[in-house]
Amino acid sequence: MGELDDLDGPFLTGAPGPAAAVILATMDGPTTNVLRDALTGSGKALEQVYERAAPRLLAYIRLRMGRDLRARLESRDILQATLLRSFERFDDFRGSDARSLAAWLARIAEREIADRADFHHRQRRDAGREVALEPTDMPAPVRSALTQAILDEQARQLEAAMDALIDAHREIILLRKFEELSFPEIARRLGKSEDACRMQFARAMTALTLALGSPAHS
Image (cartoon, rainbow, N blue to C red; front, side, top):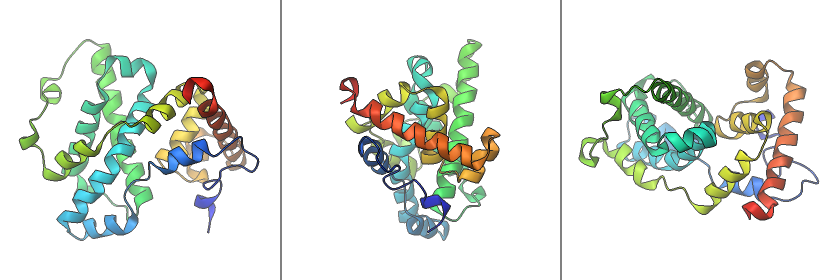
């Protein structure tokens, strides 16, 4: 079916087990059909888009933050800010499928994480961004999505296993499985060849599966 399907099923022939593939598969976001309905103006579809995107986005935010930032910043606050910012700018979204939506949301989340980390580092607080909104102040799709964003046991297992990986392995899994970049896009981002990126991703998935199978994460 094309390069986007390469290594995205069982990931590896002879891999130690399906744990990584199974857990990542449970974090699928909204389908392209639902997204297209939302883009044509369906309020119900838009709410479904946010509800299905939120749990995956929360997992991405926490993984992108890493252990140190998670100890200092509240990931759900970043999720809320990301959802609100994306809702306010939804008309600016130029994609047409679930993959492009995942990448768009990831970019917004990355900026939010960087901004908040910078504020924390400088021991400054932006009052306008730090004041939590009451549920009644939020747009309905965002409010509904936040109630769906629960960090379940599988997400916690994945988080612990990802924390155990080397930086290069963690980064390429985030790029491929959460930002849903193609291998040519990853190659440009990392400044490597496509073949090198494919090999690095294969090794990363093997390492993740092994980490998920270790007693500490099972």
